[in-house]
Length: 120
Image (tube, rainbow, N blue to C red; front, side):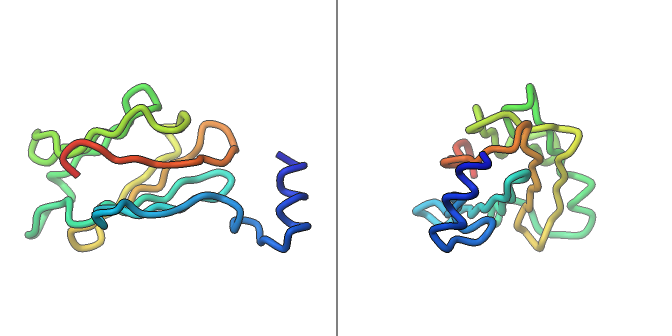
């Protein structure tokens, strides 16, 4: 990792410029990463209304999957992820109807891609 960071710096890239990020072709989500975390925004996933955050449940089964349920109904299952995450270090918030996930990487290494499937 040190050699990779040194090569990126020599090429004029900042700390995170050399790390993959992106969005899907349909505009359903976008993502970015640092050495230690992956940030994901799933657009228009949550229902509208007051008290929505109490109805949304996000879990990370096995540390290699993201599972999102609203009112007990599975809306999104992503897995296996590019690499394992640390469920204890993960968090989520709602921004309007967008679900924002902060995933702590199990080990500090770059992810090449992130693909969401399911009902996103």
